[in-house]
Amino acid sequence: MEERVLVFDTTLRDGEQSPGCSMNLQEKLEMARQLDRLGVDILEAGFPVASAGDFESVQAIAAEIRRPVIAALARANRLDIDRAWEALQGAARPRIHTFLATSDIHLKYKLHKTREEVLKLIAWAVGYAKSLCADIEFSPEDAGRTDPDYLVECCHAAVEAGATVLNLPDTVGYCLETEYEQVFSSIKSRVPGMDHVILSTHTHDDLGLAVANTLAGLRGGARQVECTINGIGERAGNAALEEVVMALRVRRETLSLDTDVRTEELYPSSQLLSRLTGVAVQRNKAIVGKNAFAHEAGIHQDGILKNVITYEIMEPQTVGMPANSLVLGKHSGRHALAKRYEELGYPLSKPELDRAYSTFIQIADRKKQVYDEDLIAIVLEGLDHAPQWFTLKLFQSVASSEGRSTATVEVVKDGQTFHDSATGDGPCDAAFRVIDRITGLPGTVSDFSVHTIGEGAQGVAEVTVRASFRGQEFTGKWTGQNVVEAAARAYLQTANRAAHALARVEAAAAAAASTKPVHANARVDSLYPGGY
Image 1 (cartoon, rainbow, N blue to C red):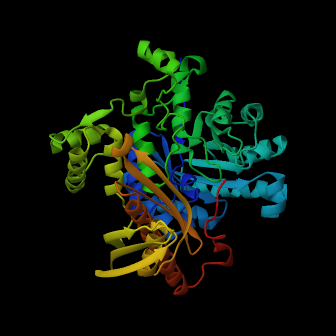
Image 2: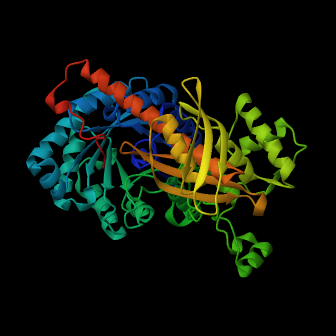
Image 3: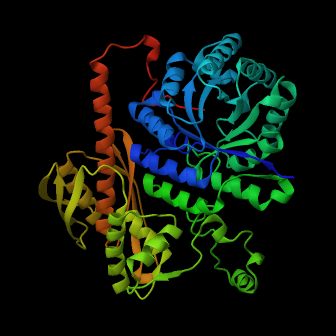
């Protein structure tokens, strides 16, 4: 008989720590609603002590999302735990997730504490959190590199203090499968009281082993997996939720494990996260990449035509991937368009549908066929939730064969329209420079990519821009027939996100300056407290 594995999604916490993947409050709420539709068991909503924005996001998600457990992360100190519990007050099923490093490397170079001091702090932190909340998860950070005997002591201290979940993270993606499996089997057999405690995996992909190690942890006795949509997260990322879930689903006869995740929501979840963060999914990404169910080799195509099981171990519909190519034409109405968007995972409000329909008709007039990917491109263009500090009103560019180009734009800023022109080493560079001048927020482009959506010359360009503003990186994405205009709009999107983030930082600094510090130990380390 199959056993159920609990899915702990940390897209909004560990995933958001991935450079360029930060989200504002409305974006986090939209993602949380989709994760609820996906059917995750636990939703880690954020790190409340990290910032006012993180606190507000956890608080809002806890108040609205009622089915899954809502978890908030906290370091092993009173300020963090109190802040997490305050943010979780409105949750139907709250969980405080506290952590402390246990490897000798971290103890020596980061914490500057002895093993004995850390043991006492674990017992205190879990015990204090337990006095506030019934459901407590404890993570010994860098468990994968922690001395096995000492890890047993740390886990024993946490269990005795009231932990209901023990998460054993491979924080730096160092472990091999056999090693990570042994970590779990050791804790399960050697720590007293494990009959009433759930073991959890948390793996990183530094060696490309995150999903493999997650499955190894399950073989060792874990029954909760911590992962993120699209595998986003610190450095090389976390275990990809869609890969773990589908590995269990496709091979459940062998593994005898499964989840309650609604797999048909995997692709919509992936697409939504990509839209909200502006970070594109690589084409060859397992399960949700554009090439995941594509076949080019003649031998493969022949096999697929005879029977799809020759080269596909799952159907695209199983993960919510659009299966049919041709969708709609210029004579289709709003109702049909709305229905198809719902099938693709994009339920639209009436204003959103009106905007999408207007663009759809323009494309349908130009193209003989309109594909699902065209529809997704339309919705990605129209549904950006970044605060619109700046709006592009007019765009023109002139390119020269000698290399110098000119761009002219009109941008609405604070209700006023500003008109300016600039030259650059290409039309996109010129557009970026004039936008910098008008916004007063110069950025440095660190990544720029263009790929075509749709077939041949009728396809539309999807442009992704990553730019740094005052040391912080932001990502923008836009689609359109004109590559240079799409690039300008994507860059302006990064400027909007940067302006919003910097305004929050300035507001927080002003608020902090007007109040007395809580305590010297209440300082938040760097811009973000980090994680495991």
